[in-house]
Amino acid sequence: MRSKLQRQRVKQGAVSVLSVCAAAFLTLAARPLFGGKSPLLFFVIAILFASGYGGAVQGLLATALGVGLALSLFHDQKLEFALAQSSLTLLALLGVAISIVLGKLHQANALLARTRDELKLANETLADHTRQLAQRNNDLEQFVFAASHDLREPLRTISTFTEVLVAQHKGKLGPQADTFIDYIAGGAARMNAMIQGLLNYSGVLSSEPTSFSKVRLDEVLQRAIKNLEFAITDAHARVTQESLPVVPGEPEQLVSLFQNLIGNGIKYHGDAPPEIRIAAHENGRDWIFSVRDNGIGIDPQHHERIFGIFKRLHGSEIPGTGIGLAISRRIVELHGGRIWVDSEVGKGSTFSFTIPKGDNPESLESLVDRLPAGEEHRGELEA
Image 1 (tube, rainbow, N blue to C red):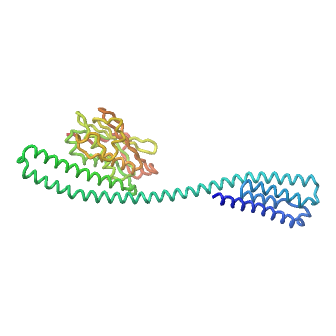
Image 2 (cartoon, rainbow, N blue to C red):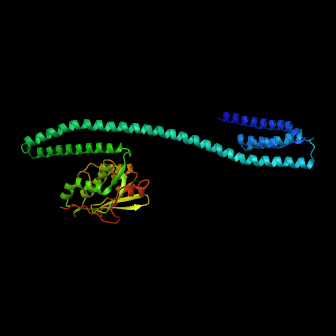
Image 3 (spheres, helix red, strand yellow):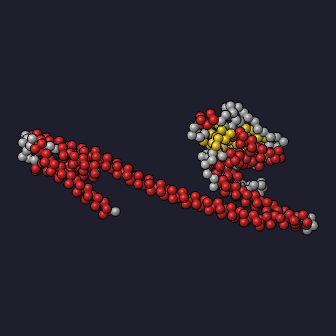
């Protein structure tokens, strides 16, 4: 590296010397055209060239060489000494100024070239890492699918023979045997739910936001409520909503998002029947949505942990797989937003998430009608 830098400096110095020598030759050749006088124009051009090529140091070198050659070669020209002296002084000052200015430009250009090369290398590295990550994600997706399929075969066998055992021998082998049979059946059902949840998470994880369309979230929410109809009826839950906007998104994923968040509010309720409220408000270029419930609440120390895969706070006390919130986070991230929870134990929970309005929200609103701002639209199911 050092030898390369030295060779470059020698090359720049040689160019500076040659340019000044060429200027001296051209000045000698041009004297007859200027009535025997020696024009300094060629020396100025040489200094410009040296500074532009090699920077301030080479410009100063060319200036010194030019002044020296002018003194030695053209001292006999028919000019007053004062005029010649002032001309050489002007040449020296002009050369210094040119050297400094072009030297700064040369440094800036070198820095820009270095930055461009570094940026190109960084982009190539990023592209390579992106390809590797895409390949790993594809391999992971295939592994999860294959593993889930392979796990389901023996699980289906266990479930089938457990059902046969229940049908033919339940109540005949004693209370302890019946308890064991229930454990086996419950464990098989939970394992099947976890495998299905893992497949769902893998599907969302491998999704890319390439098929977004304009989505009416009021319709999306009603679909989610319809899917939860039996859970809402069974828990005597009450679900209400404000008017929701139209956003760019993937409808099925947004249905899953609302279904997970409302389902959590129903599942983790306290002594009172669940009450769940869905609302939205604008915040700059985003919409902020909230799903508020009156459930048992979450300790603040677990607010981040609950969004991890298979992370559950209540063990087997409350049924579930611990995947719903992980899927919800991934869906929100695919839509360019973020999700968080505000909650305290015994005071309910409010899950909030953002979704960008899109590049041109005014155009979006003109293409698809929205419900009037501020109007409350209730979609409640009560037992």
